Length: 110
Image 1 (cartoon, rainbow, N blue to C red):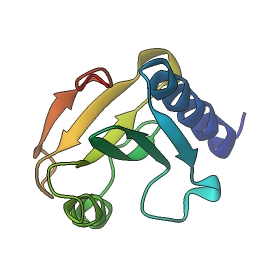
Image 2 (image 1 turned 60 degrees about the vertical axis):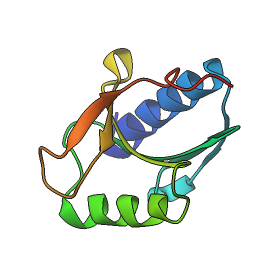
Image 3 (image 1 turned 135 degrees about the horizontal axis):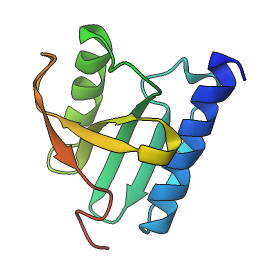
Image 4 (image 1 turned 180 degrees about the horizontal axis):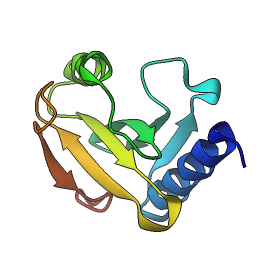
């Protein structure tokens, strides 16, 4: 598999995970925008940057924080790290590499 198709497998694992937890979703095909997956549940909008191996750099983290900030109390800036078989989620709390906390998709019930 190529790096692109490996990454797509992780994106689809994230999509299945958020669907299983009651979210509506949209995948950003080609991943050139602010997030790879947008997921919505009443009272919560997830902006998810999906990475197969390495967390995003400071500029990508800043973009996620900025766009989630447009929806105070509702927008959630997340990084999902693969592989698909062992997804983990990080809720960003700042732009630094250690500025995050663990998160799970069932954190807020519908």
